[in-house]
Amino acid sequence: MDKVVKTRFEEYPENVRPRLEQLRNLILKLSSDLDLGKVEESLKWGEPSYSVKTGSPIRIDWKFKSPDNYFLFFNCKTKLVDTFRELHNSTLEFQGNRAIVLSVCNPLPEAAIKHCVELALTYQQRKHLPLLGA
Image (cartoon, rainbow, N blue to C red; front, side, top):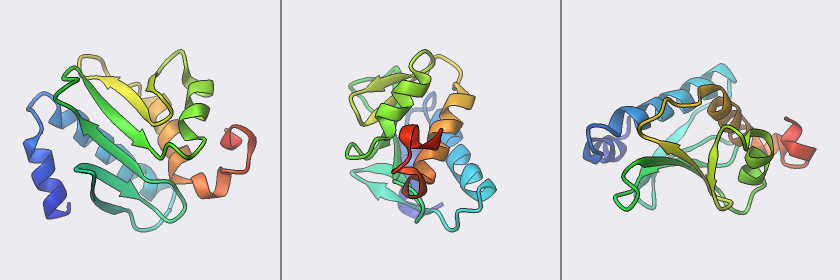
């Protein structure tokens, strides 16, 4: 893990850090399983960010102003969140066209999140397809 990203993870509250680490691990494992090459891990706007050449960057974070939630952020100029809303509206909560909102108190809806992360990691290959080829 990048030293700056590691420091950022250490700053998260004890009840939130494992949730964000779970998302990080899911992103890295899925990238590896899909053989997408090197994942660039960095901080963007103070948030851990994950990027591969075939995809659109994914950021994860927790905010003091919303202590019961943590977030997966996506580029708002893509069709990603609109597509996720179409596919997973009954399972996931969204914030505008930029984020999936997750509850610190509830288990991660892993199947839906994995699907969304896969679509984001392969966005460059899918962006022209209806519902991103889902």
